Length: 448
Image (cartoon, rainbow, N blue to C red; front, side, top):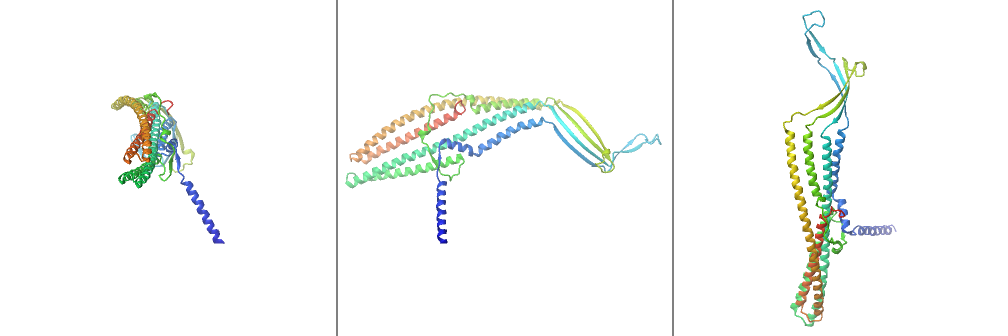
């Protein structure tokens, strides 16, 4: 009885384990939007960019902290193993008017306790440092936007590639089905003696080539999915299923969308670098301006021949307040030379801004032209595919009726396959052109 219960428990555990395993291995259905969202959440380089932003933001806290009072406490407990001696040019005892006196200053123990407060009143570089940090913070925000868009583009390209090979597998599967059907018809005709054995062998070769084509498409699809997992930073063992087709993804822009080149982050960052060099130049020159700070000190000095810090009457207070003004007079022309370096760098960034603007204007014209050409090629490929399919259907019917040779059918089948591949490639070209244009327009109003 106990053995029977044990076997039932083992059987039930096995069933539950198999069910859990089956559920765990269910493929993850991936749409394009879901793939992008997962990549943005999982990519460690984007998380690193967030840390860079926080580091840049913390720089302002350092400037804010420098404006606060700086308070220091100090203590010094000293044993004078030998007191300093000096000679007075007179006799302090009054017994030898022409003589001198040797005296020692201090006590065996001299202890000090102090509290020092420093407050910066005016530093001409503070405002500039703050502006420089704000400049770097704005640059970091733009860098994050670029990194995110770069990840998005990688995922889109990988996803499009996977969709392309999924569609290619469908076409190759259809081609294999056609080849198998034609081979079966040819086999029957050969057995009936209406075609030659050589014609039947051509149909066998056609079927074998279609099978190899499907196998290659499967390999290409598997590699594309693996690449997609890589750019998503996903475990390679996670099963996924691509749930969209090329026609689901392609939504070409109608007309010619507006493009403002100054909204591109590359242009903005170049302009920020211009401003950064200008601020650096001003900061270098500001180092030669006066700085003002206030300070105060409260101290206690103990003089005693015995070490007894708790004896209050041996402690003597002292304190002082002050204002310090520091005025640079001559730095060996270092500030002027450094400012000149920043001026040259500023001019270089201005030229870079002009170049970046021009390059993106040219890219915009190129992407618009590429999109229009891809759409025109798609229309031609679609018409050609329809014609090739119509011819093939006619020839296949004639072949079934025994009035068309297998060689003629093979040519018609080949032309259909070429037309279908060209149509698929045309769809993919439109998809890539649309991707490139959307990435270029990503920062325009309504396209973020």
